[in-house]
Image 1: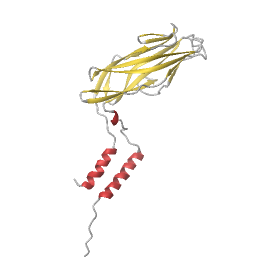
Image 2: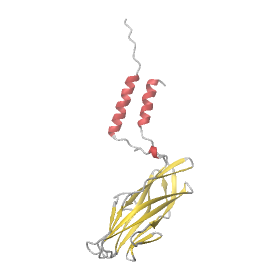
Image 3: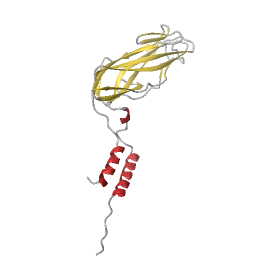
Image 4: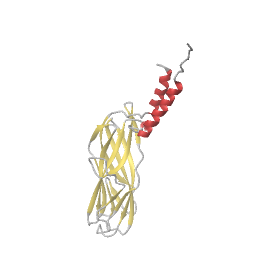
Length: 229
């Protein structure tokens, strides 16, 4: 092929996004609480931040499956708002582990720091306890069967059927014994971190690619010789 064509084609292919591979995955999830503060206590998947009154429970999923790249529902977090603590803060960590059966034998764990702002009154009007999701853990990576997988902890959402309505904090209803549940979602992509580029470029990016490619074509196009009659 003519070099005048090869050069711009190579340039365009460099600018175009890299699509992640499609791989089938499956597994289960579990979670435990650790590092409680201010007299709160943890027992496996439950954090009792105010004695026997206010507590937080994480329930993993027994099975998830699908094809990459995709988002997956990894479990739910339920908070019972019956605390009587007077304006007290509690902290703990939620360690979520994703057990991959496909590709097999891979466990990925995320450490999520949580902060509880407890109000007096056990959830009576105007005194709802508040759970603060203080930050999302960084993505994790593993290699299996010649593929590199990236697993992200997307956070807690309002639904277990779709990743939508992201919740930065979880506010508990202002009624005695009220509870609320949020649902943990994560994403799995069978591609290394350097390949995480949007699959659909913005129109402005496409225009820039086209303009640059056209300029390269003009620059390398051979000049026609002129012969007088």
